[in-house]
Image (cartoon, rainbow, N blue to C red):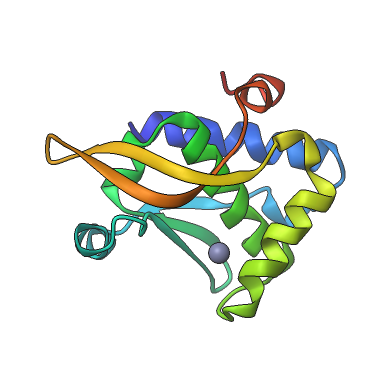
Length: 143
Ligand SMILES: [Zn+2]
């Protein structure tokens, strides 16, 4: 549900800001992009992307809301760092984002693993999706 995802995003940003990781993540918007639903239909790993044209925004496919919370928050953590650091639009940034998380948010237990979610009533596997630990969800007040 969207309310859950919005709540995850607030909890995550509050946690990061309380540790000095940037006021620029305070007003990140969360917007459903119907075009990204089509992208997700053909690519099981396509859940979110970011843009910052004055308003830092995470766009998501509807399937994102049905992911397990560990995967949702793992992906949000990745996207929030893209926006917070301004690392957007260059494939080189993917490694920069992940390295930053490993260095500065080690308590997230950030890692990649396969994720199974429900898609049109069928179980579908997304390979190598960002995850955080259950303990981290508790730490940020999301669990
Ligand atoms: Zn990325």
